[in-house]
Image 1 (cartoon, helix red, strand yellow):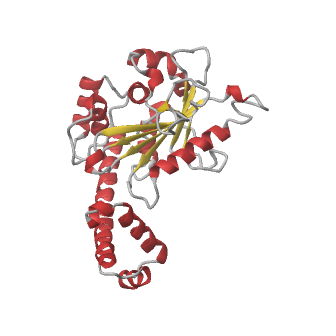
Image 2 (spheres, rainbow, N blue to C red):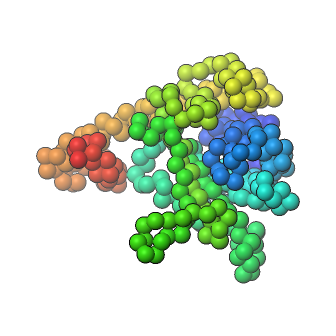
Image 3 (cartoon, helix red, strand yellow):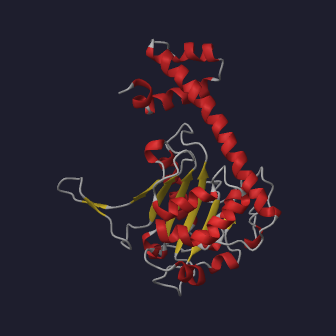
Length: 309
């Protein structure tokens, strides 16, 4: 069943629920920052313009959070909102945006592929909701944005954008991406955060690091967000404390999980190096076959880190 949340209840949820962080990305001022910095359709527009003209869907509570039935394949998405485009404010649904918070950078599959699936799922869901019959010209562009909390050092405080492009048929390599072209219907944006790297990435990344900092107090966060980024909360009370505590719990859990996984990956890499096969590794570690297979895939996908090649 779809769960609807009021924009003023950002900090109302139990800190143990992912909903605390997910609802943070229905805060108008934060969403406006994301739109301006990550999506070309909003580049150059003042934050105040975006807030006043493009995000009225948040006032109407016309967005979904954690809807287990969302998408044609029943994809469980964190946050899904629609916004107006500055170039066409008359149209209520300009683009559709999915925002995901990714705690584990190596979940056993490629996150980019999962993001592409989510984007395709969003487009498929537009059938009979955004467009009908064969009116494919009415399809709205979708974005899926992934906030990776523990990205590798080499990616820390950067972001990447993936989208469809027109290839040069002569060489099959050189491509042209044109915003608003018929093929410009799905994009994926990856935001790479790392708590141990506190420099680089400009004001936007600094703002994101502030939101998810495991060390800043509530007072420090509120002060920084207000003074540097003009982001304020109407309820600066115990609800804010809940989010601060949630961030600490998330980062503590991430640290524990990553430490355990790094240890297991190192063990697997050492055993692969001396010629042990998957069954032998499973017997030594005492883990289910599926977990051992995932660990081996992770090690092989990061061979430079483990094998120096």
